[in-house]
Length: 498
Image 1: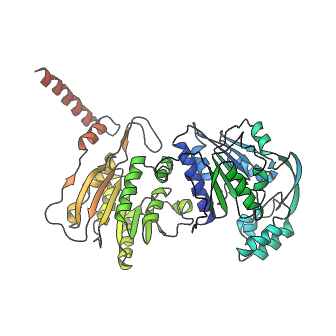
Image 2 (image 1 turned 30 degrees about the vertical axis):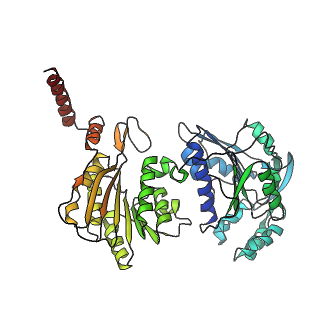
Image 3 (image 1 turned 120 degrees about the horizontal axis):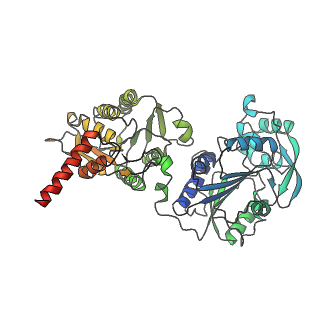
């Protein structure tokens, strides 16, 4: 990933863009490195709505064998206590209660007191994140930036200055904090110090420590911002502006091909080859509208929305799906509830709106009956243009049975059906959502056209022998299947001897 030095125009909320940019960069490293080291300066409490690292750390810095380590730094004691609670039990996350500055010692820090909760008073919840070593953060800097971008800027500023307190905090240079924790290599340095970012960057000896990625808040630097850019370019970084931040990449960093398709399996729940297949199908389909049934954390949904000309619909039983993925995704409409009820309603709505449905990704209920009933509802739809129906986990026996039991031949608009369009995987050991000795993944593909087919529908299973072999060696096999397989094996041995 090498961002352009030219500013990029974005339409997403800044916090959504920041999280996506940072997560994508870090996941590219996880493709080629065994471990990743993060340093965050200005961590606050760790789990605010706009924290760019929290979700990534929950996935990659927890569990028995975390591959990601993080040093999170927060100067305010009462905020630091909450940060400790956020990451309690994360053995690879280290916390430091200091302010990072250009020298060690004690300094004044300007922030709101612990008993003030802006959101409860009808004010933006993010204003308690504006603490800074700079005394002019809520005066000069506020007047030059927020006052021009927020409708209630004056009200917020008056409230903040009325309640603001000054606390004495311990300061350390970044170099000394890193030495304290024996950190000599940094993959991401994330700075959010409310106007103090350049002061920190100036202290770094880039000949000794040169992070792969640096993310800093650009909009509060003003006259210092060109100097900051010049410094980073001179020491070997390419800069890309987005939202309120600038993302810097070492010029010698080699990105992994197909980076957008390589985000973590925990988020996608797909293998790289499946992501590539889905990406190719979406690009080929060029759908006006797409429908996803079962969105999980929304990585495939984002892909659909980016390639839809108009919008993507999401159907999921989990009401929290929208919280994970909705921020900034202007082209997605969410439907929460049972797919058996929502699929007919959503397809009817698409018809009423005269929208052209070009792709459906079915990845919801994985029971045999659930898959069968979802497909039964979909097959009642009459396409207005070529429609690609993509069914995930066609290699799982329950899902596959549901696909095969669906009433395909009742729809005269289905012209093509391949159950093994992209074969799945056998898991000898448990991994993520897959149990040991289980079969998951794979895509079945049906193509529906806006005219009736002539003749019978061929239901292809090009990898049926591979699937059957996998079942016999998996925990899915019944006792009867194993006995029959054993008898056939014995029969084959004697037939070869004869």
